[in-house]
Length: 127
Image 1 (cartoon, rainbow, N blue to C red):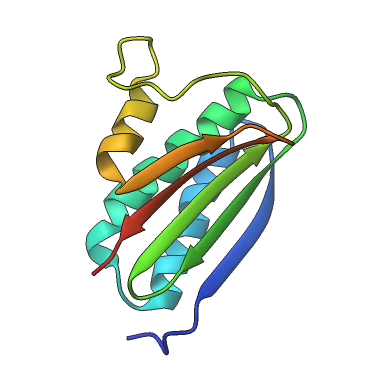
Image 2 (image 1 turned 90 degrees about the vertical axis):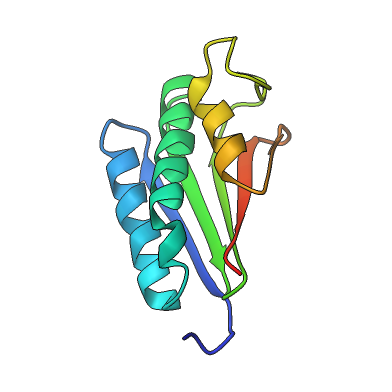
């Protein structure tokens, strides 16, 4: 069990083919440090991989920023790229963004902030 202090991670990732793998590894480390939430490990791994992949594929060249904040009750994940308008959140995957539709199904809350950069975020309840 953690000591109820939030665990925070902010990591710049090169926007390349290795970014999703590194992001999954970092997410697993956050869960390990938290000491709880392992029942959401597969969900978190899939979500972080999808969001980072989308930022790499659809965002501008440069780094992607992965932010995670975790407590015993909640994990908030944010992926930021330098773009401002490269996709919309799908409601059912029919527009080709099946991965984002899956993120919506696996997380309790999710959304997109577009300015000053694109931030795609989601929250997973752990309780």
